[in-house]
Amino acid sequence: MSYQTPQTPTLLPIAQSAIPATVTNIYTVPLKSRTWLETIDVVNTNATATTFDVYLVPQNGTAGTGNALFYQQTLQPKQNLQWTGIQVIDSQSTIQVNASATGVTIRISGETYAYY
Image (cartoon, rainbow, N blue to C red):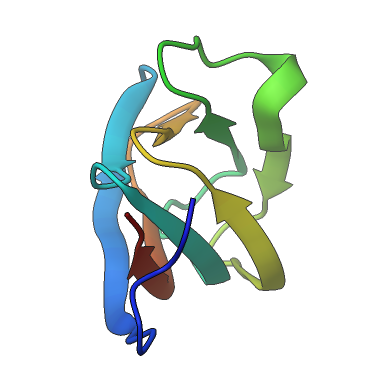
């Protein structure tokens, strides 16, 4: 596999969403691309503590503890969490999320690179 030349990143917010109370896909890596996740911001707007999960699910996979980036992570009322780093996810992989209650939001930023 080779990357396009010159390699031109597409800088973008990968996903921004309210996190539902059931496991839901919020992003799919485009075909013949890889996505670099660089920041994740999660905010609990509730007046009570709430947990959330973020899964990096390979193509045709299922969200579970084996692909959890965050699992049952607790956010106190009105608290936010910011993660920075690098996670690379492959073509057709997905980012899936869920929370123990509504009122939690997420924003994920990074870069997507196409390859041939």
